[in-house]
Length: 119
Image (cartoon, rainbow, N blue to C red; front, top):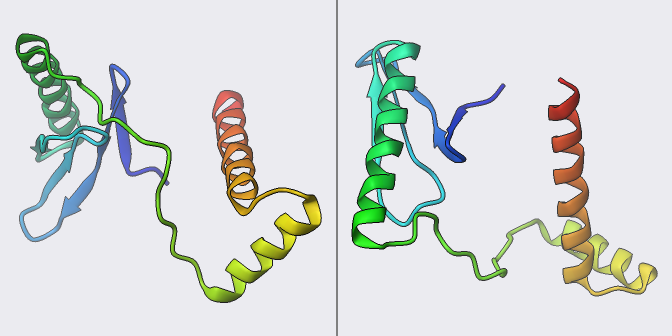
């Protein structure tokens, strides 16, 4: 199941509010908050695409970078036993824990993109 949509290389999260009977979401990977909503899937897609198009125009007019910048480091919280196992594995492979985690992420992304390409 995927709870996102893409348009012009932007990702929008997708949620449903049963109380209001509306789909809603926000544009991800940006420093601003841009939301969209619709009563139907087609309304949601249209609202998302309009939000992206408007956001692109605003960024171009203000010369603001469109996408959030990433610095290449982040904290990951895992249970202590998994942490210990990962550390031991990194030692046995002769690499740092950071290298082990990076390799695991690269493998996961490659598998995801390969599965997506064959679907």
